[in-house]
Image (cartoon, rainbow, N blue to C red):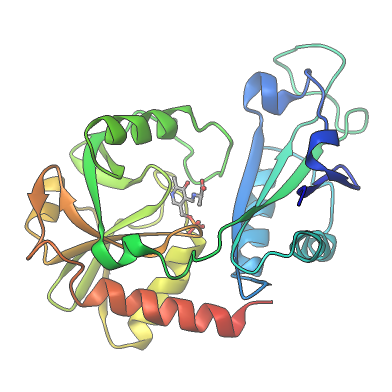
Length: 287
Ligand code: PDD
């Protein structure tokens, strides 16, 4: 089945969807994005993603090309047209395509933003084998820009980080700045000590994960203690457990950091429980 995608108001077969070579997303990485997961054909945490998108756009003085209600409708229509039961929807909005390359922002009245959405079909996303074994990470220096709270499409360094992890024979990388873990290349990072979940506090240093917000809420509701503070790789290596969260991995246990095995090298108790709660609650609340 050919995938149907959405480009600037039209639903098209993927091979007919086109964006200008002058698009600022292409030339300048001048764009923002969101990834929303789909479970049981419904959207997980749609509202959170829509609110963060609005914030990313406003922080960059970029106009929203569609309303939140229209955005929901487009997401649902793509799920329907592509028959998605489990997977993701990728959304990208850029500052549009001016007539030529120019560092200055174009006038939004003259250059409309570009909006693109497509589905990623991932049957078995919730029942991921990696969640049963846990993943391994290495640490690398965090040399990204200073506004990581804005979800921009500047993903070269995260891509390089994933490649460094691959080269090291592991699954992902945790980023470290001034001695402290910021987050994963495309996820938020956590350690567990006893019944306490420790994760970096929100600031411009990390992306304010939508999954993070939900998972911390569920953890507190389940009487787990949550401490939002910095932690080092050394502390993480000594932790009972570790895990990451994102819209594409939900809650994923981490069983090895820089070659050091955590606990007995299996996912432990807290992360799998949180994954279970997150999936259960997300299915119930999906729209
Ligand atoms: N990444 N931190 C970074 C740097 C991320 O790129 C992401 C998401 C997260 C988790 O955010 P959320 O829980 O809202 O997905 C944290 C997406 C999934 C991606 O780039 O594919």
